[in-house]
Length: 148
Image (tube, rainbow, N blue to C red; front, side, top):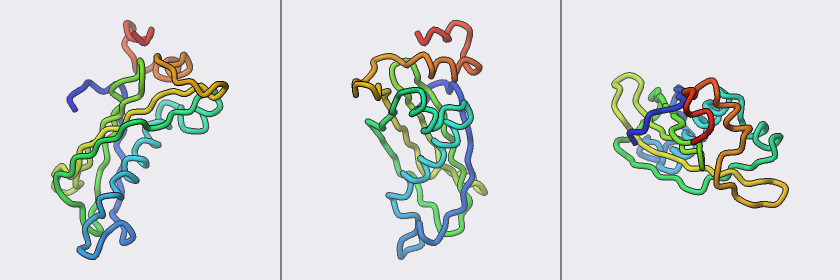
């Protein structure tokens, strides 16, 4: 997870009671929810949230997700989830780092991969649709605007 981010966003959350197990640590499955919250905030940043995706004629299902658990978040901890878009040409790859806000300790490293699916025929695209390139253009170098 060392790719140069195209665009990044940090989201802060407090660990709630309903996210922890009997040992008062975050149940491992809830990290997926934290990634989703951070991903939604990142997508909003470049105006391509799930409703925008649908309006553009594409669905973007997650086809791969990896999480590496480094340490545990605990009840009432404040965590920071940094989401960074690192690929967009053929798929959207978003990398995440979840840290404890107070100590800065890394708790989790993860990534998700989403692909564009044309809603009209259900076919997966093998290159980014022009609408995504347009949305990302303010964040891309002049040489990258083509999506190459």
